[in-house]
Amino acid sequence: MERELVVDLEGLRKLASELARALKGNEVVFLKGDLGAGKTTFVRFLVEALGPAEGTVVRSPTFTVLNEYETRKGKVFHADLYRVKSFDFTDYEGEGLLLVEWPEFAKNLKPDLEVELEVLDEERRRVRVKDNRGVRR
Image (tube, rainbow, N blue to C red; front, top):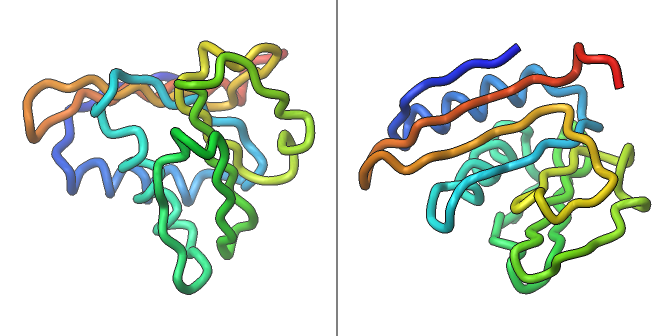
């Protein structure tokens, strides 16, 4: 299944909330888009919708490579491969929701969902969501 929509910030929050309800909690989600497209903002909204542990602050993992968040729906691993062109996800895959920014550098990792954000203007993004969960691997 694939869908495309144009959203503002509130629409992006609603989309993240909708996806949070549909996730089991152990999927791999690829986040695609240029710098500043809203990938980390989308993760922030998704974690909020999953019910984060008190005091959780979602930050870009650009320099840490991987951040971990506890939520009511389980662990969320948020990786950013912009500065690291190779990373072994063996210890994380299947242990929680794995969100990967710059997934073109994620060798041997197959996405259950792909979320692509494209900047249209300062306030709007075109978002494409591709659900690969029904596709045989």
